[in-house]
Length: 269
Image 1 (cartoon, one colour):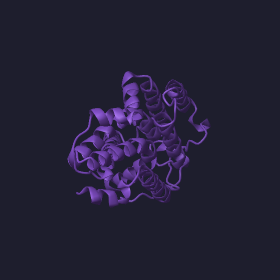
Image 2 (image 1 turned 135 degrees about the vertical axis):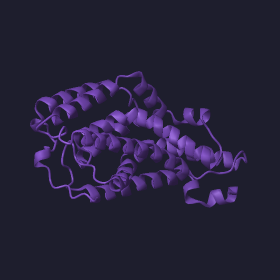
Image 3 (image 1 turned 180 degrees about the vertical axis):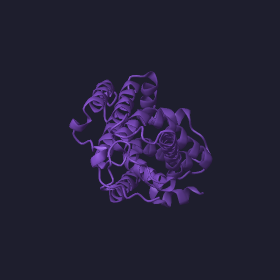
Image 4 (image 1 turned 90 degrees about the vertical axis):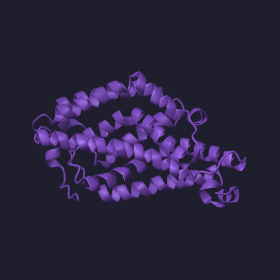
């Protein structure tokens, strides 16, 4: 690809254009997610449907939730690759290749979560029932996610996500395969940072638009806003308290759909 071609592409002109495209894609993903998931929240233990259906909605959810918070990294990648191309140091690599690698990492996480859900269901399909161990499992998962907020691994991954230029300068790989690899690597750091928050979403009801928006807001705050690392300990305490609350008195938790009272799923196979 020539430098002239790189300059002509709308995604390669300036950071403002790239930001508009990224945030526009996130908005479209939110619209599609709301259209597909509205009325499907059955609370904790919501059935995930068929693999194909889940994979499609999961990727859409990740685009909606994660693109706003990954935008600084994407913008940094776009600036660096354009600069290297304009100076003749390397061929231009489209930004979407990096984004595709990033979403691939989150897709892998979703598939692992789906496999874990199906494995538990196969061993004892009733263990997740709300009148059995459901509240304790959901509460325990949220408590574990809260404790993870205090670990060194969380700290390292969050610092990585908040410093895009350090990653790009020390982990740059040339070409499209290199950009894909960088996207996957950054995605894995992001998974390391946020997998606990996604566990919270699964525990509260993965098809809940309300909790999806709450978790997306927490992720954005941690990764983008100034001093975003400061609330980490407060979030840990909040998650532990929420987990205990759900285990002890789930019916009193605001915004939590009780599985026995949730609307019909109507999922596609």
